[in-house]
Length: 298
Ligand SMILES: NC(=O)c1ccc[n+]([C@@H]2O[C@H](COP(=O)([O-])OP(=O)(O)OC[C@H]3O[C@@H](n4cnc5c(N)ncnc54)[C@H](OP(=O)(O)O)[C@@H]3O)[C@@H](O)[C@H]2O)c1
Image (cartoon, rainbow, N blue to C red; front, side, top):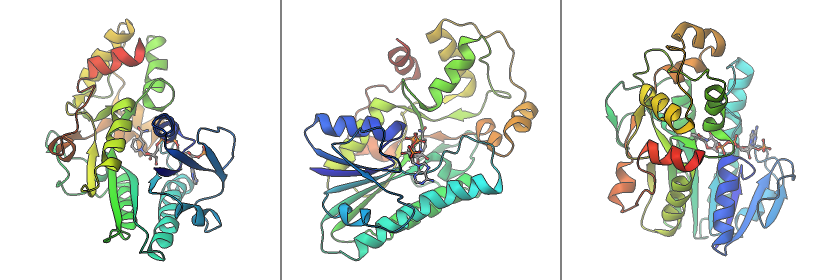
């Protein structure tokens, strides 16, 4: 298969591109600066702008769209615009190309996030749960709506609502480990908020599975089947790292003061179940947080 990945230089994109390459596929990566070299064919471009790179899309069987400015920053008008526009413009450019070539049989796998659902307390969330109304939910909803415009007889669109991806290098785990290794790891606020996570190896396998099963379409929650509360995560991390939790908790007001509106996402969270992946027969290698952390921290 020929695969092209936008945002392929990132944490998820590099793991995906290694996996597809090792399965003897041809992988092209769209990168803003051609420095990482994870694909077999690197195309330097700005995907938020129309350009020659759009022609490359049609040489492929699968497009995986991951590009987007990081959300892990203090949210200002400028950073929110970058978070929103980088995702929507890239997707719009991809979809326009596909819609102008509707006869081409192709699959678009578009990233999204469990932030789509907003905050539902302890309620288990499936793919049918209503979207939220906060900033991240609006970004995810518009991102998905843009991708779904391409859904048609020849164009198969799959939306992957990622949970927090846990991997060895990069992503949230690396950040959390920094605190635990300095004995500063602790729960956020009351620690009752849900944390929907996925081991990067399972995420990559899930995307591979969705790419290979041509009957599957629309949205899939890409999270482990057993989400944990922030308190349970703290306990599991402390035990895996063998670093005791010395601080009672990080007060909610301090998190909000430090991170502003973004702090809310750490204090609320979602309890997401990957209902459609399980129904489709996908098997998780790491369904439980303890096993995932043991593998990643080993
Ligand atoms: N990792 C997670 O836990 C998680 C959870 C939910 C959803 N997601 C979503 O999944 C996608 C991939 O996540 P990731 O962890 O791999 O993210 P990442 O490591 O931050 O990589 C993001 C990718 O997007 C590119 N990018 C950044 N700003 C851009 C801009 N303004 N215009 C065009 N491209 C831009 C980056 O290119 P450069 O290398 O040039 O900066 C990079 O290739 C993201 O869209 C993210 O929102 C991730």
